[in-house]
Length: 408
Image 1 (cartoon, rainbow, N blue to C red):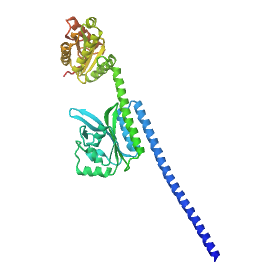
Image 2 (image 1 turned 90 degrees about the vertical axis):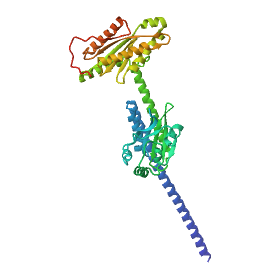
Image 3 (image 1 turned 120 degrees about the vertical axis):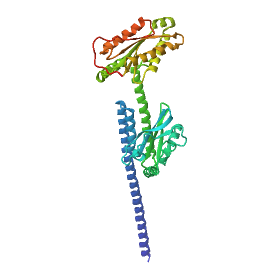
Image 4 (image 1 turned 60 degrees about the vertical axis):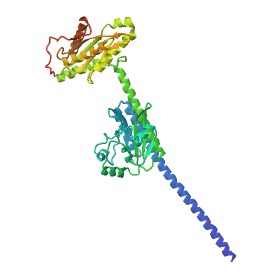
């Protein structure tokens, strides 16, 4: 019977070999499956990275093409929700007024699945959170300069001025249930700007997604900084450094535009010019620094006396002017007297009181061309100097008839 035992042992050894081969094949299949899953994940990550790069290229194109800040930020917010794994994104910004400082929704992503304004009753833009609210995670993230993770979307409404009804709360809960929410504080040039809120499509935000969020948050901060820099450069190009008024270049362009507008509407505007009295004497007696102080004080008076629609400018030296749209002569005289009085009553340290001579002329009443208007208002200003200074003179009307004027 030894041969049977021998066959049995060989059979068992063969079975062991087969089982061993099966185990190796199973492990190989598992490794292949894991490798396939890894490759799929890597492919998704690569696609996501490519979309992210394309979106950043688009953002930079917008910045370089001088697109508005609002459009740039909208591109960033929509890029997160449309191209990456985020269901919904909101950008909160700090706003201050007489009522205090609040965090308000500046931009919200556009998504296909729901309409947030419909759910909230078109109140998204009016939704705000007081900056002194202690219970709200968005405020906490901004004040602490730390990233916050949330799992309940309704927490963003804590302490806000928006009261939601049960049906609205239920709808929001059904959309955002079990979604992880990331709140990233935004700082611009070291100062609090707002927060980026992103709701993930998944229950948990991956480390890669967090990196993308930080990357896009950085793009927001950079975009705001670049826009502020461009605005500053543009402002410097049209602003007189000493007084803060518009410079002569901007004034001439604005005067031409106002003349064309006045021609179309048949409505007048008034031009006031003024000249600092005795500037040479101030410079000779007290020095040029004192002269600069006197000039700066006139700029301050013009800014205080001007309305939002007025255009005050410094021509250069001691010469100033102000364009007053939709203003007749009587209105111009009132403002001119206010300016004259403010200048004369302001005592400047090291100099004392200064004065200015002013001329007033109204387009379509005193003159019908920009050249004549500038000429006669300057003549009126110099007449004020000849007649004793620290006074106002009205321009003499040109003899040629002009278009019919509507005064009010």
